[in-house]
Length: 258
Image 1 (cartoon, rainbow, N blue to C red):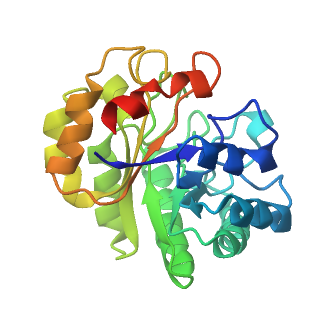
Image 2 (image 1 turned 45 degrees about the vertical axis):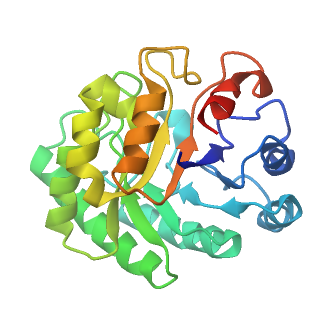
């Protein structure tokens, strides 16, 4: 079975942020990730990682003004300077935490913005971030996100992400494949895992439609986890679901796949 990691933005929310790494370790996870760590003291976060003795896999680039509806700055024309400042901040956090990968949320372009302009902005920002993070040995990943949960999100399907990656034409780019978002937008997960595996840099999961733990929704998780192994994936597979109750009570799927 795959090596499982815990996303601390969605799991172990019963605990304060700095106590979540040790809670994940005690629950059986040897690796963690977080979406946006930038409101947390970096030194304290590094200490929490060391005390828990976990690997820190990934963080996201800053999303911009979240309260104003921004869900990433990469596709926003006119925000290039803010995006580049976010890359620098992300690199500082990523280097201190020892992450191998960073997720770049594309964002939601303003209504009425010309699509070609949005795409050109996104591709140039991808190229810049891939280059800058690559200097620190950190790979940049692009994640398609369904537009049911985030209406207007610009990159919603793996094929679209791969087309943008090809256009950016930088060796330090890869695909973040979230099985929850992929099922909502496209489905046919087994066939698409086979088709996309060579481009996948990281996998995340939750059970649709509720985005809860495996066993609460519509997917056959033993078959999916076995397929990930069969296809030769050697990275981590991160649980990024919202537990239907207490996090500890939501982890029965781990025992079934041990």
